[in-house]
Amino acid sequence: MTKEDNQKENQKESNSKNDKEQKSAKNDGDDANSESSKVPITIDPEEAKFSNAGGKSEHMVVNFTAKRMALKIRCGNALFRVEPTHMIIEPNKCRQLTINRMPGPIQTDKAIVQFIDIEKDAQDPKAAFKAAEAAGTKIPHIKIKLVAAASGGRKMSREVLDE
Image (cartoon, rainbow, N blue to C red; front, side, top):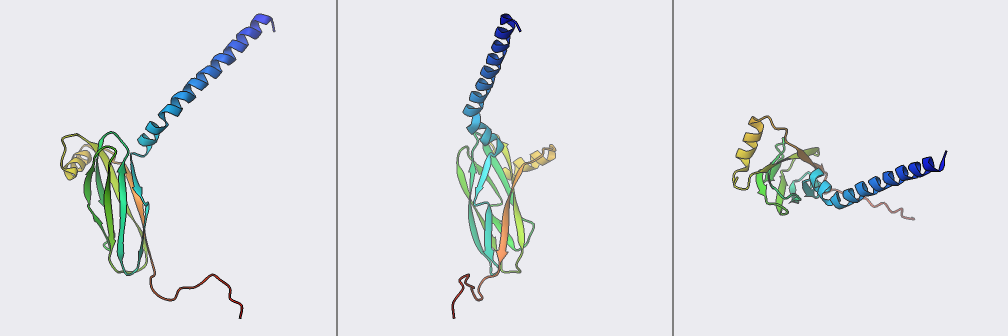
């Protein structure tokens, strides 16, 4: 290679590195925005645990977007009840979700939390979901795992006792 060819090659490598650094810098600055766009709604905790005698689990639903979000929460199992079944969450705010379980057999199920962004003046989340479904919009969702286990009875220790 000639000296000119070496200089051109070095210039190409330098430009390539600069482009990568600029893209990386853009991505670093957009991490919060990209995370928000990937997960606009979060639920804490993501799992509800109950005894077979029933119980109540409270969850915090957080809207990380700059848009108003309408939520529809449902569970197909008659042992579980969710309150509220529909709600609106303002931008960067949170709301409480309560899941109640009636006494019944041990089993695992899930609650489905569907969400869509809505207009600033919309007041009825049910109407927003009906309109989205009528328009054929694919509605994203999050699942909450519902776990019921045995309660009462004898508790066993993991310690080994010397007799």
